[in-house]
Amino acid sequence: AKKGDQTAFQQIVDKYKTQVASIAYKMVGDYEDAKDISQIVFVKTYQNLVNFDTTKKLSTWLYRITINASIDFIRKHKKHKHELLDNIFGELKEKKQDVERIYQRSLIKWAIDDSMTSLNPRQKAVFVLRDLEGLDIKEVAQITGMPQATVRWYLHRARSKLRSELSRHHPQILKKMGIKHEV
Image 1 (cartoon, rainbow, N blue to C red):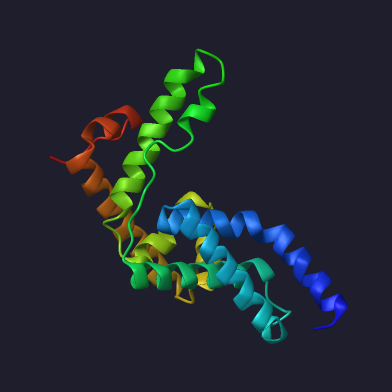
Image 2 (cartoon, rainbow, N blue to C red):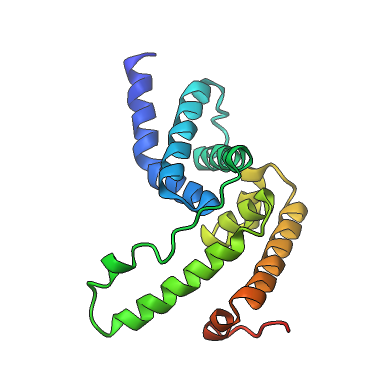
């Protein structure tokens, strides 16, 4: 590879490594696995950079590679590891009155992570991209390669399953979030 290509690739890595790792983590629930997936994503990106359609958004292409690598990883390893109340001790250094808020937020995050294990990989992908990453339906459709209507359907199913799982296993969390749960 030419020096210019390597410099351009390094700029891509520097710009997107945090987002790629974040999506991978939300998909697999483990920091070490997310780092491994990120490495796979950037190796695939480097190998396929010559095939990238420059009329498209680079972020969309990278997120698609990330989602696919994460789904491959889940299928290969069948892992559903989730860290319980991750980083809570680091956050506890904040002001005393913030401790209860941090604890509640950590409990909610843990309950959602725990409930996400009930989602199939496609449901998880659209939920992560739309509800956790905040992308719009059109972007999620481009990343996943699904029609927008299919994305909406998977998103509806994911939200329904999550609400059902939270109702069954974590009703107190739904109550704290102000969401009425089914009986």
